[in-house]
Image (cartoon, rainbow, N blue to C red; front, side, top):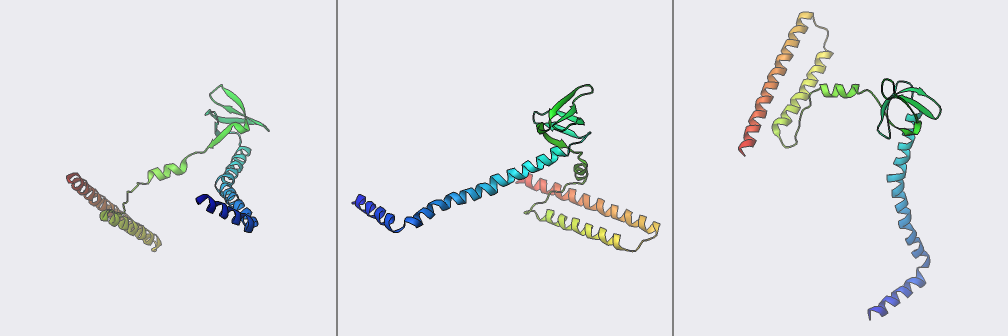
Length: 187
């Protein structure tokens, strides 16, 4: 009985919906191509353009890493190759396409490391309060910059007061962290 119903359904679909059925079979392939384009092909093309731009901009003195993992400094550039110094007396001539990355100085990262990192949590009220205090300090610092120039003695006094405030807040923060640690250890 099931076979009879199946045959009837396929005959009806074949007679009435020939063109619509063909369109419905093409749509998934088009959607798959669009997804592949935006998630695979387009990003790969962008990355390839950036790599070509980096390779064409190589100059003497750049620090590079090859695709084989060799680190060196560019000493000479030619049209298709570059010469890198690996050691004091060791130089290697490689194709430009063998360069994986150009190493830049990490000046920006050093500045980020110098700034103290604060841990914030969405679930801790004390840490939220410290975030508000940090924001208040930033606003206060901006207000101080906006004020008219003060005499040298007043500037020194305000700096001393700010340092005392910061030191007091640090000790309060450390005490709060110790109490949090001890309360979490008791749990």
